[in-house]
Image (tube, rainbow over all chains, first blue to last red):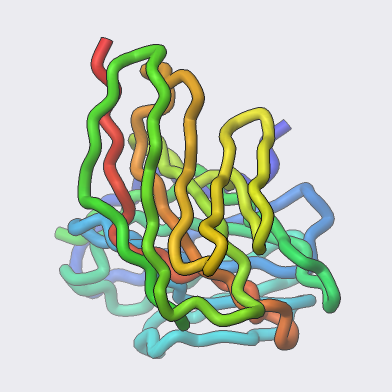
Length: 116
Length: 114
């Protein structure tokens, strides 16, 4: 069974369009994340959600709007797509407990977004 | 967040041990040292973590310097499947919900030669 899944795997679209990427985890985790990996392969945190509440928004343009309908899902909606949004987007999840010494993050396979 | 410094790339022959170094001279007492790796066209995956003592698991070993300013990830017998980018990451102790996000550096690209 896939722990963290993302759909679609590839997304090719025109500038100005609106698109969504879906993420689901079946690990029972309470925290989910979105990361962006650009063409230079740098991985950067975008958002962190804990129990459906936004915790971290790392200076991401407000064209990006994450939505968490429940603890197992964190979707990423992007409005008015720009060329610079082309990247691979990774979803991740972890169990975020106070007092936990570590919490391994499980990553999805990524969604490669290409904006033409 | 405290920064880590890793070599950009390393090479290893298949079935030989690999030592991947990481410098973290500004590490704080509550920082855990985590290693993740990213295989080609895949998401990152957890490898190992430690605080002060050396650690072993089925994937690798982590050797931590006594002053904690550096650490080394050890792959005991490199296989072709170990070719990946390896990231050394410092993770602060829990400081509130959502505080466990990972800050990735450039990592070390490991090539394994058959």
